[in-house]
Length: 162
Image (cartoon, rainbow, N blue to C red; front, side):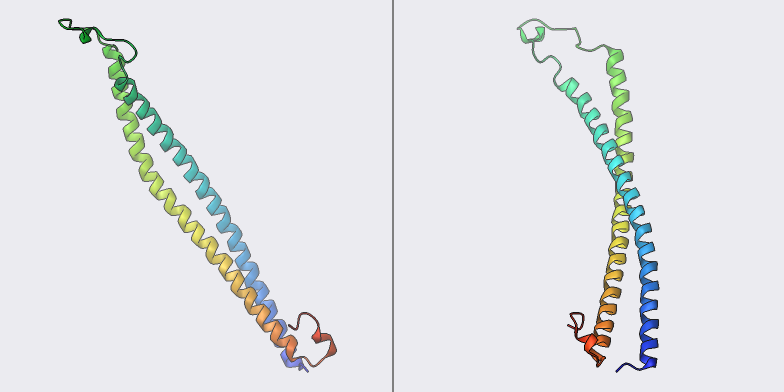
């Protein structure tokens, strides 16, 4: 039979466990929001990084593939082509774009490292919160199971007892 003192202790324990669980649930909700924001920022930086790299590669390919598809005059013996495929202004513009893009890529690489760190940190906090809730729940289950088993009553013999 459970004494009044044990019953009070059980109520206090369960109330304390519920309060702690509620606080952890609130912390979990906050950490989930931070994780979502960090993951969204990571996706955005990743997209920008990939797009900048693609643009840079396209500029490189432009000059790598220049002249393909037709035979340049320089391909014939004794003929030297003095005609450039691209104007000096276009080439200078592309050079400026490549310098700008390389700076953007370098900055985005730094941002990727930072944001990736934030995502991992937020995920660790979410894991910690879930783990805390699971441990608290296990403690309540263990405590209440022991309490139910100590009751010498026909009502305690139900499925919750074991």
